[in-house]
Amino acid sequence: MSDSNRMDTQGYQADPQILKAFGRVAVFMGGDSAEREVSLKSGQAVLSALLSAGVDAYPVDVRGCLLKTVEDPQFDRVFIALHGRGGEDGTIQAILSQAGIPYTGSELLASALAMDKLRTKYVFEGCGLPTPAFRAMGAVDEADSILQALNLPLSVKPSREGSSIGIRKVASRQELIEAYEAAAVLDPLVLVEEWVEGPEFTVSLLQNQALPAIGLSTDHVFYDYDAKYLADDTRYQIPCGLAPDRELELQHLALDAFRVLGCRTWGRVDIMQDSKGDFWLLEVNTVPGMTDHSLVPMSAKAAGISFEELVVRILTDTLEERDA
Figure 1 (tube, helix red, strand yellow):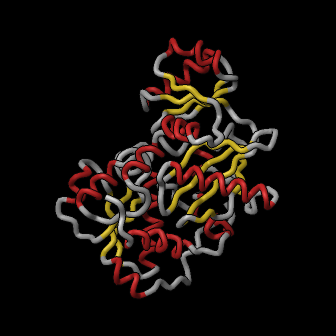
Figure 2: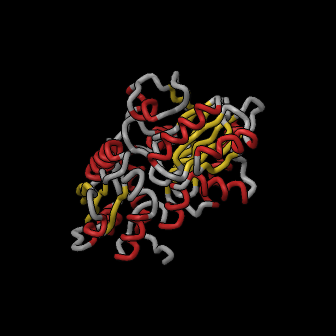
Figure 3: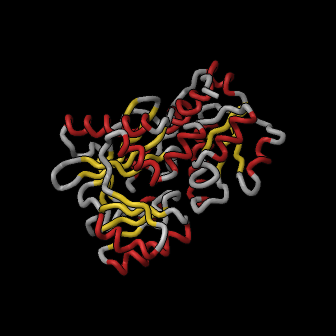
C-alpha cells in the first residue's frame, strides 16, 4: 500500500465539550474469534487516534467470559473494535445494552442479522434488493439439488464468519462438497451463492451518508483474507472508476442495504458488478476493519475526513439515546 493510503491521524481538534461528554472510553479489541489478530490491529489504531484527538481512552482485550467486561466497569462508554463472533454478532452489544453502557455501531438485532450472511440475503431478497441467487447447505447430500438450482461457478462460505474466512470459489460437484465440508467446520450454517464475475466495490457509510466508493482488484481469486490484510499488491481505486451517476446508484444501494438490516452509525457494504453492469449485494459489515489496510479509513480520507475525525464521529453517536 502506498503512503497516500495510510491513515492520517494528525491535525484534528475535537470539540472540548464533546470530549468531556465522552468521559472514559474503553476500546474493546482482540476477543476469541477467528479475527482476533485483525481486531487487535484495528483496536490499537482506533485507540491511538482517540488518544491523539484528546479522548480519555484505554484498551481492553476482551478474552474469555464477556460478562466480566461489565462486572465492574471503569469506563463510561465503549468503542467496539471487535471483529467476528462475540463482538460483531450482537453478543457484546446485548451485554452492554443490558448494563446500560453506551457503545459504538449497530445494536443487537442489526448486528446479529448482518453477521449472518444467509439471513441477510433472505432480507435482501424479501425487500427486493439485488443479491446473487443462493441456497443454504446443511449436508453433503444436498450438493446435487444445489447444482440443479444454481449455476456454476459458486461461492461457498460459512454464514457467520467475517474477513472472507472460509470462503471458496468452486466449479464442480467435488469442489462444492470439499468447500462445504471445510466451511461447515467453521459454521454448520453454510451459504452457497452464484459467483458474480466482474468488478468488486465497497461503500463505507458514516452517520447516514455514503462515503466515496472504492473499486477493488487483486491477483488473488477474489478479495480474500490475504488480499485484505496481508498483501501489498491489492489495488484500491478511488475514485472507483464508475461514472458519477453509477457511483451514486451504488451508494444508494449500499444505504438501502444498511437500512433494511436496521444498522446505524457506521459500516461497510460489499457489492459486485456483473458483465451487464448490474450491481449485486454481497454483505454488510457492522464493525469493519480499522487497520492500515482497511477500507473505511481509506474512503473517509477520500472524503476529507481524517482518521481521528472518523473515530470521534463514530464515538459521538454514543451520546444519543438508543431504543431499548
